[in-house]
Length: 155
Image 1 (cartoon, one colour):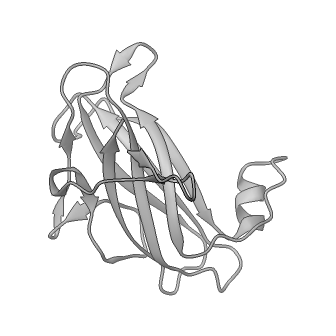
Image 2 (cartoon, rainbow, N blue to C red):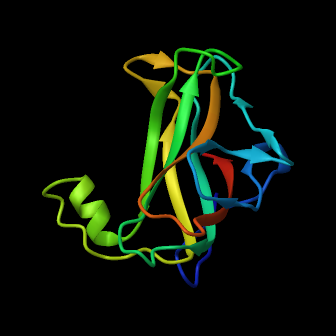
């Protein structure tokens, strides 16, 4: 990650080995994939800190009840057969629907296409999770869904 002087916004370098999801519409709960295969990233046995850079190109919220929870999950099983935890979550979609899901949060702004950055670490409750994947949970009356790409940039 680096910062540009003019805008003071971070820039992220894309590394194909750290790509978590290539383009493609998501309209139902699913693990992220690259080239039509589930993507699992092995970050090793120690602490890993990074940012998941998510570029949303389409976000359907026409019904007013759509929510997409973009998750970074960890596991110590390379197949994610067991021992799965959520390391970070980014809810996007209809603002009032997000506000209702997170009762009392006051969220009321609808999300749009654009870049979202989700910081995370592979540590939870003093346990390091070696394997990472992305997962989308889809809620609401979905006609088309969400289209995005995602990659990890190491801190």
